[in-house]
Amino acid sequence: MLVLITYDVNTEDASGRKRLRTVAKQCVNYGQRVQNSVFECVLDAAKCRELQHKLVKIIDKEKDSLRFYYLGNNYKNKIEHIGAKPSFNVEDTLIF
Image (cartoon, rainbow, N blue to C red):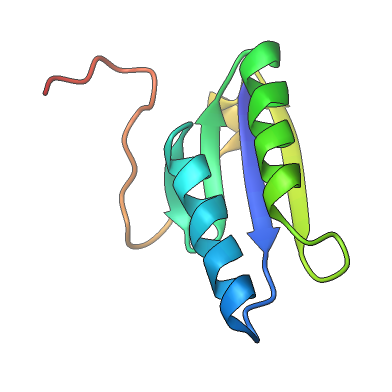
């Protein structure tokens, strides 16, 4: 299923900036960045719970926020992209 993850991390102090970098690094491991604090991740239920658990441990619930949008398996007709930063199909084969 496609999960859209957005976050807002308070960066007023050094610990907030560190949390922001750590959240972004975790999200990169599971999906692709589509905007500064927005990631598209194709995950099964177990991986989604795993990522959510990791992110919840990182953020400060008093200062930061996370949002998970579950777009399901039939997500291709639910997304329209206009403008810069072309994306790639995260389900295609990657060659390294």
